[in-house]
Length: 98
Image (cartoon, rainbow, N blue to C red; front, side):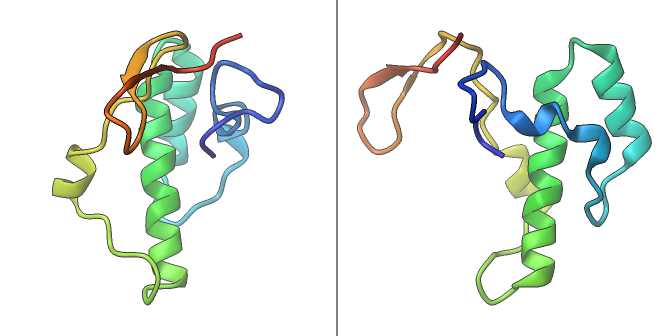
């Protein structure tokens, strides 16, 4: 979900977006975003939110509900090579690229 096992620049879930069947996921929108080829960040956000909602639905005692306000606060997916603070460190790191 969050990375690519082969070390690719984009999360593996983007490669398999057209195969996913998650509750509330608009497959037509997923296909439109995937076929556009320039909207990976938007596609990733849709998939991540759908996965979060599915986890909450399956295990509400473990995963909180994701409402629209919380979804709007999600950070953007960093581009390969983009510098962002590493979680919990406050110091910049480099998002791995190819």
